[in-house]
Length: 212
Image (cartoon, rainbow, N blue to C red; front, side, top):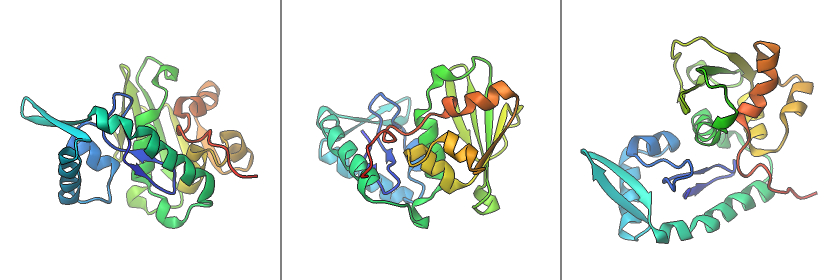
């Protein structure tokens, strides 16, 4: 289940076996604006309410949803769909590269990626240099997102605005529309350039119908 549904339509939270996070540091990365103390407090509250179960294995705590928590999933997803459908254009406060890249990492269709190590580098032109560079690395069926150069050969580079990638991810616009409007540039071999949109996919809420 994903306990946080914002204007951007992102749903982030405790693991349900379908891409959610289960460890504290993973949850922190998915909620970068929440302090560790507040996150701990929220997790304890959810545990007391019977929504989350905390287990410890080899000294490492993990958080998973109970049956009670799983039953809330359609409620939270419904709120996310409502936000995408009715909130309208995103404000600057809704644009966060940490949240966006973590959500992309959580839901990319790994089966569409090559079996060999594949690295897609992102460069955002409309944010501060400290948060402008990101890398998605896929190898051996696992994916990681980095805000520092992992040192591997880059398969493709995507130059794009944070707003544009967020709008593509939400389903407000398409890769084709962004490419035709020169809002995105993908650098790499022709076959790779064609494949990048398929590798990244879109948010689960991208298919939500918008008002006419």
